[in-house]
Length: 298
Length: 275
Image (cartoon, rainbow over all chains, first blue to last red):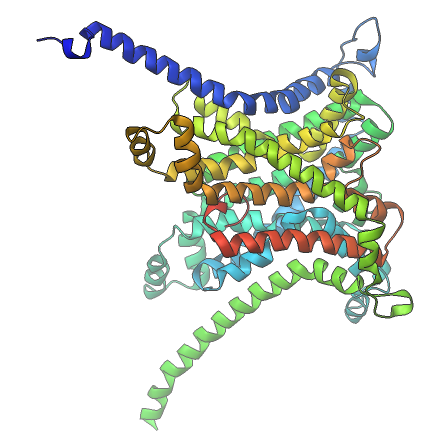
């Protein structure tokens, strides 16, 4: 008896299975093709283009003689523009720290105590509309003579010194990225069994000891993921330094590259700046995703 | 007296625990208020008229003078959503249901736009539009920039929804003689509806409020509403009318999110932005 009723021999069936398998692969690739084209045309090709331009001198890529390759842009990044790089990293680091200090207790209360989480979620969507509205609102609040002035005077702070300053930029940036920290830490915390904390308390541990010995080690990956993700978002900060910062904070890389590239048409240096931003953001996001794997997208 | 003393101890402990809980709740509410404070103050400010009086005229101004900007925002968002959906639906279906080489890598390549800083996307597109694609004067440059930046937000919820859907439904439909096309539109698409809606909602909210990439790639004739807010706040100082425009934008976005929460809950937003 062979496979005669089907009209095919055994090798024939194997060939048919292989053919169908190959067809399915081709159909799969065809279905994914439009999406792939979209990211290649509007992300990957432009990114390779600016990497290439960042290694040419001045705007020589436009000259008919062909581009003139050099690393002058990168030496400028670590020379003239070093303060810009440093202030960008400083802003991102400070706002990440603020997010961690306020975000951990927030996530803890949210996961352990609160039953009205949907209300909290509804509040937390406001930063998602963008840093622009936050910066705008803060600018209005902090304006001398604005709503915050009486409060600041009560604490003996000169209202005029607050609006254009480092703390107000960091504060606005922290509001913008706070949900990312809470999301990561909260996901890690909800995987920790509450009975562990109760057991620690029963065995005589003080709250601080429970936090350091039980909670922190068990939520470490979520905390690291949150830190990295928030840092990666804040490295590209744009509206907050412009609307709330002094001259010092306005040197943040994203704004400088806009000024240099779009306003002054100095494409080489602004490409180098965006390559630096890109490398930092990618490195940070890569490790963030490695640490948060499984906790977030299931 | 002895009995009283021992009896009062548990009461004290309970009340202390209550106190800790109370502090926790108070802390959460304090943070939440700080969160919405920028919005609330703008809301109050947007109702102030000349000389500190109460005025609704600012919102008439939004529909009048800023009407053009609002309409650009809506049009760009709508076209972007259509492109995103047309691109993300087949891609998500292929990722979940079809075998092909390098799938993990391709999926990562497609979600990467979310992790590129907006200014970097902006400057790279400015250069490419200027010197290679010649798209600087067309609104399509802006639309495709928006589509590329937000389509991972459309893709991820659809992939999650498809993974949750057992293959049995599609197999049953095919056994009953449905073509692939019929199976997809009559069986799969309605069942992944919440995931698709989550993607649509997220993309709408992000594109509708996007000012950064827009600042780089917008053609001179097109100014979307958030970009107008940015320009006005940066150059013209503060005005109640600008606040009214910002408040309108946020209220529209908030309404879209609340509607989604009421209809579908928060399940499909997991891992995208909200916990």
